[in-house]
Length: 296
Image (tube, rainbow, N blue to C red; front, top):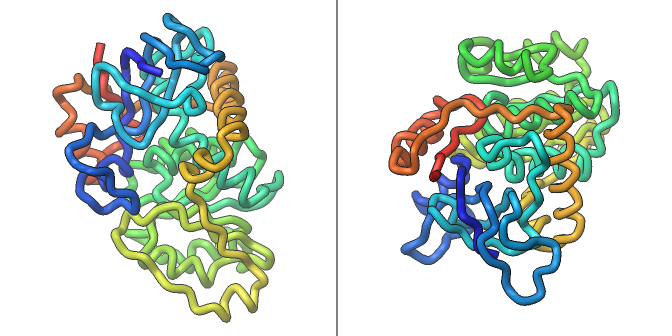
């Protein structure tokens, strides 16, 4: 489909991709941007669920930072009444990662303790919000005190600033020494290494991303002794392999946003020619939730 883009969200994955540090490296030149929202301009042969004039959110590996984007119909979803383009552009990558990780891969149960690192970023804040929706007890990990109030507002019952206080001591204190049931880790590096020793019996340690730039190794006696699992999560690959399940998840998420059961956070909106400032802010971890480029 061709979509007239009204808004596109800016992600850390986009920053990695333009700097050649993401695991998938598109041939250059390419237009960055994974997620957008707008109005369908045209559909190709075989597309039956959409038609010109429909309001949609869509995703693809590239192409969102533009006036017109192409996307497969399997990666698009109708935008419900009451959901604006800015908000809709932030849902698919962030909340689908949270849904796939926490519900499909970790099978989080009500009352379990979920620790989310990088909790004030786009994917992290969505994970806090979705874990709260699932009935989990959420501990948010952040890198500065200025992010504490936001993650609390989104459902965190406790917050750890791992740049200012000992992560191990705080997690043990918050879990009566048992450790967390699920760790949704966006950071990698030293934080992930610490969490390998802070999992509860039968827990699920989930590497989501490596914002620190460091990929850690795990002494395999640790998951053995605690019977915890290390569960990889790449929601984009899941969407490629299971397009029907992915499309169903997209529709469900949009309805949850429309009913306010989930609440995407748009931090700031930039014009399209402000893309450098927006991407720099995300790369420097100065964004709370999602930043949006408004094309029209």
